[in-house]
Length: 90
Image 1: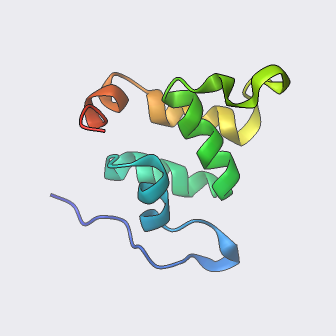
Image 2: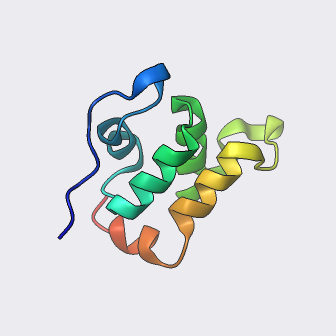
């Protein structure tokens, strides 16, 4: 088994692996690394997680289609059926 990504805070204020897991839950190291590569803000990741969990109506009538980093994050989080399997206990 490979070593998990570092949890130290990266330079530039980007989210750490630990922060990503606190927001996105128990996701695979590969997903964490893919998210780290995008260097999203906390808000972007929280939006993508909400969409991945089917809470796309959190913005009500102001809802906008996914775009940019949030869209890429959503793709990472929902790729395959692992998202559902990883969050069955939630």
